[in-house]
Amino acid sequence: MPRRVTHEGAECPVARTADVIGDRWSLLIIRDAFDGISRFSEFQRNLGLAKNILSSRLRDLVAQGILEVVPAADGSAYREYALTSKGRDLFVILVSLRQWGEDHLFEPEEPHSVLLDTRDQQPLRKLEVTDATGHPVDSTEAYVRKV
Amino acid sequence: MPRRVTHEGAECPVARTADVIGDRWSLLIIRDAFDGISRFSEFQRNLGLAKNILSSRLRDLVAQGILEVVPAADGSAYREYALTSKGRDLFVILVSLRQWGEDHLFEPEEPHSVLLDTRDQQPLRKLEVTDATGHPVDSTEAYVRKV
DNA sequence: AAATCTGGTTTCAACTTGAAACCGATTCTG
DNA sequence: CAGAATCGGTTTCAAGTTGAAACCAGATTT
Image 1 (cartoon, chains in turn red, yellow, purple, brown):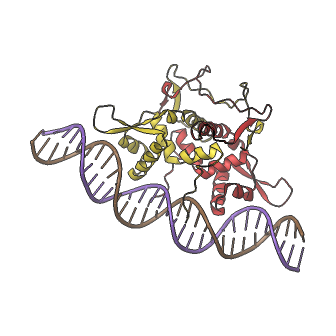
Image 2 (cartoon, helix red, strand yellow; image 1 turned 30 degrees about the vertical axis):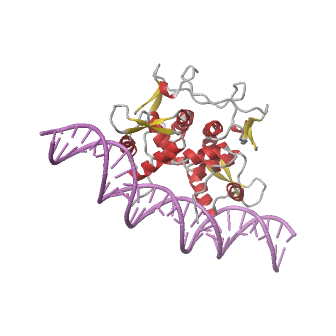
Image 3 (cartoon, chains in turn green, red, blue, cyan; image 1 turned 180 degrees about the vertical axis):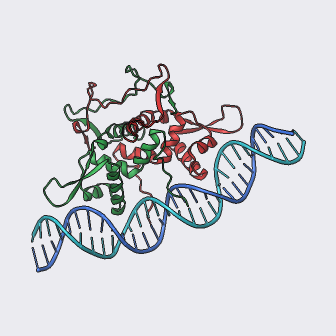
C-alpha cells in the first residue's frame, strides 16, 4: 500500500524541511500568516482553498509547532492562528522564495507584489549565501558532508 | 472536477515559486542535482521514489527551465540532467531550507549532514534578511505592497 | 428570536501517488 | 559476438489525497 513517503528521520535538513513545508498550501498559509492573516475564514477567502484542506493544513502546522491556536484578539470566543517563534523563523525562506520568483517567474514588465522595509519603504536587499567570513559563496564552492 | 489548483498567474512571487517547486520530490531532486547527481537511475536510487514519479518530476523541471537534458559526460549514449542557470539560482532557497531545518527539526545532539565551504571546510554563515543598507530586518519590520 | 457568521466535519468523485511489471535501446561480459 | 545486465523510461492498477458541496453546532448580530 503506497503510504505517503516521509523524510521525518532523514539526516538531511533539507529533506526534513521539505517534509514539513514542501507543499503548496502550507507555504501559502504561512505567507498569509506573515501578512497578518489569522482567522480560518480569512485564510479561506484569501487562498480560495477548500475548507477541509485548510482545516487539515492548519492542524498539521499547529502539530509542527509552526502555528499556534490563540484566543481571538477582538475578545470574541473565536480562535486565531498565530506564527510561533519557529514559524517566524521561516521568514528567510519566504524571502528566498519571493526573490527567486521575482527574478525568474515574471516577465520584465509584469507587475508583482513587493516586500518593503517598513522604515524606508525600500525593497529588501537580495539574500546572499556567504562563507564564515562573509564572502559570497556559490553552489560550486560548497559541498554537503554526510553525517 | 477538482483539477490541481495552480497559481501560475498569481501576482505574488511566493505563490508562483511554490507552484513550481512546492512539492517534496522536486525540492529533493534539485537538492540532489546540487550534490552532483545527474542520471535518472542515480536520482532514483538516492531518493527511493517510484520511476514514474521521477520521470514526471524531471519532465516538469525541464519544462520549467530548472533542469536541462544534456548528453552524458562519459561519452555514452545516455542523457543526463543538469541545473540551468535558473536552477542554480535556487541555491539560496536550498540553503534557507537547510538552515531552518538544522535549527528546528533536529534534536540538540542529533547528527545531520552539513553544507561546507569548499575552501575552508567551514559551515556557511547564517542567511540574514537585510534592508537596502544591509541592516537586519525581521518579519515585523517589512510588509507586502500589493501590485 | 431569528438570521447570519464562524469554524469546522462529512461525503463522495476526480486526481495523484506509488509499486510493480514491462519494454526497447545501450552497454557490459565471457 | 551472443547473452546478460543496465538505463531510462511507460503502462497498469490500487490506494491515498484533493476538492466541491452539503451539512452542522456554537457564537454573534439584528
